[in-house]
Image (cartoon, rainbow, N blue to C red; front, side, top):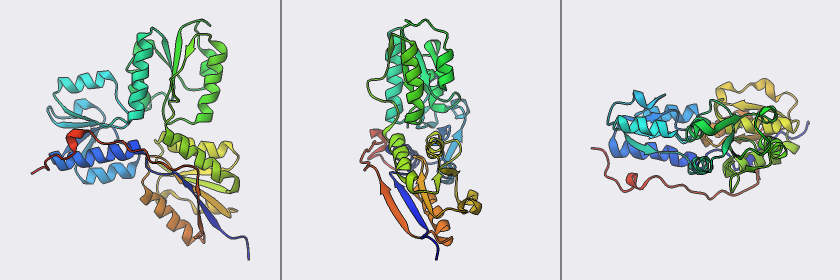
Length: 316
């Protein structure tokens, strides 16, 4: 008999408080106003969640310009720029803001640093919706920095008044290196009062780090456009363990299991537990039915939906 096959299930995993709040906002809006409820961009970066909400009457659009005038429009958890809010007001849209409070905090920091006439160095991935929203709060004063190389190449005086902010879903290790370069190069550099990387991204990365030493393979449930899920895969790979992103069980490759006795499993903050359960079922079919939970933190954060959606009359 060979070694005992096993799954190490990382905890925390799956939905965070911001994602739960955003999904509940759409569900409550559908109850309150009836279908359709328009949502600007994917409410969270998970294709399964988006499909389930579409079935209930949510319509996802790329721009607020696609929403009929005066209709209900939900802004996604990733946040929007002031320009988007102005456009929505011009169209008389009934806006419900599902921006994660931790992203809103970064927006407020961007405005504060811009008022202080500092050039803002925004550490993040260009093109990601959260970065677009934060950038839009001070576009004339913001430079996006994606890598340590970008930080080295910044053509700014050493004593220029600067500030840095980070996208909330990055890896802590990744941003540390970039911030270290900025701190070495610039003498008047301010940062946020508290770390911008959200507690959920940090916890999920820490949980992956906890399962890696005992895992031959790490599987992270999450969509390809989910920044925090992709970072979790990268964290495992940086520590020398094979790792794969699993958008859902249909994309699981049995070949990955070759030579793996212990498999670490986790899920990004936008991935629902049902997709984790389906993956665990598939692994059990291959003999990995002994599941041990590896917990690094208890999460008790709750972000409540806007008051207007609570105790409101339902749609006729």
